[in-house]
Image (cartoon, rainbow, N blue to C red; front, side, top):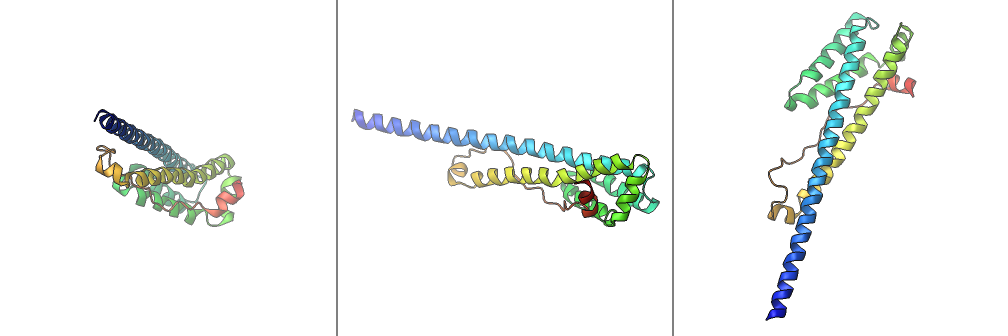
Length: 180
């Protein structure tokens, strides 16, 4: 009788430790996901800010300046539920303006244009990496949250279900190739 109770106690402690370890792992994944989202937000903000600076610098023709400024402004001001669409539209505007390598060269030849083009190229190159890190963290958290033990014992607590950030983040080829 005593041996059975000891084995039951040991099994319950082992299960408790395993569940505690799983909950800690899930918490670390949520922290990693939050940090990745903050890095993504910073890169998106940097891209929009650099785009706005370039659009107001007078280096581009007026039509291109207006297109870029409005897209960057919309991306910076977008509500969370419209953010992916606004950021995708900024990517499309950047590709439309910088699809022609001659446009990139015209920007580089203007006073201060070389550094502005280099900064924009760095910003548009970092967005896909930040988004990939965020979506990888989201995927890891989702996979763990889908396990039965996590659902049955409610190890995720009240944390919202993680969502990937889906957007068009293809950089303008002419801008990125020249900066490489």
